[in-house]
Image 1 (spheres, rainbow, N blue to C red):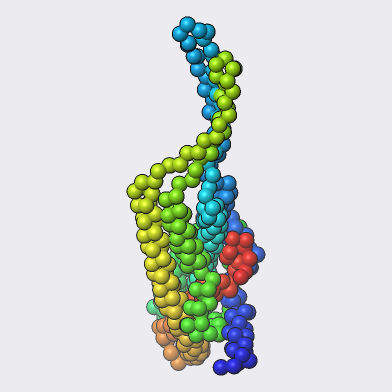
Image 2: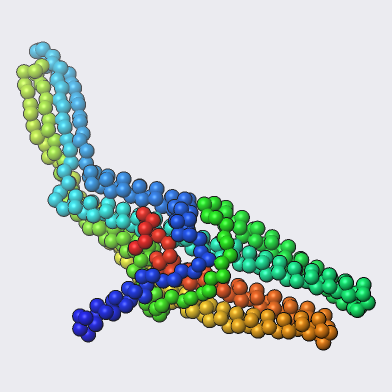
Length: 414
């Protein structure tokens, strides 16, 4: 493969993912970003990021501080005068070469991990938002369809009552129409209760979001196969990147503990006054701890922890790969299922229309007309639920690939 072919291939892959079509029934990007910014889980992650930044500053400053030691004593000389003596010492540990650089890298890795955790928190909050948003849309769709059914059955019931008064219909037909209307009204009341509960839950979790507005958004599966979406998702997944940063930080900490087997020296400057001021003493001191087995054991333990985190990273990568591939298959299947159910709903609508006209002409009875209308209702409900389920699956696919809403620590798209 030559360079030109490689460039063309990369440009094609970028074009496939640069501007994917997001479902039109989603909240506005600005509203979603504001809701995610104010989510407690995200604010907690931002607070932990500030903690990591403070820890970075602490590591940069180093573990050693100046120490001041003061002492006084009374010297009693047999047969001579007594003297008051004193001394002052200033001490400070010194990091050996290489330890400061390791501390800086450890602190920076901690900050990067915390920043990725902010993105992970935004991602989880966005997943919750999608679930609650589409649950509310599902409930609203049920209310709309049942309301249409009630309206039609009310008109049918009035028509049957008029025909009974005119003697053109039996009372049994009136009972059938009234029973069908009562059942539809009960189903409407239940759907309205579910819609209120879904909207309430959405508002409780994300009060910044406006109420969902139904939009007849047709599902459209974005371009790219499962492998392409797996690669795109893994390249931006905050959970995976945070695990990589955690493993890197653990490796650096293992190196830092291994470096501690060479203890830092403590340098001191001492000034003393003895013999009542007759003697003035200025001295330098150097103290070095004698390392024991504990330092080596701590280094080995941290190295094992780094190895465990590296394996955890590999497990996360494997799990995410399987999840994304499975979700792409589900999204693809959901789009196809919607198309089939939409066709079924169209056929049921034609059948219900013909049956209604035949009923008006007296060619079929009310039972057949009500059954056809019930079949149409169920077909409409199934198609609408499939449409919203497909759009939710597509939105989740885009969200996991960071092609839907800003998910990083600064609320920006990658």
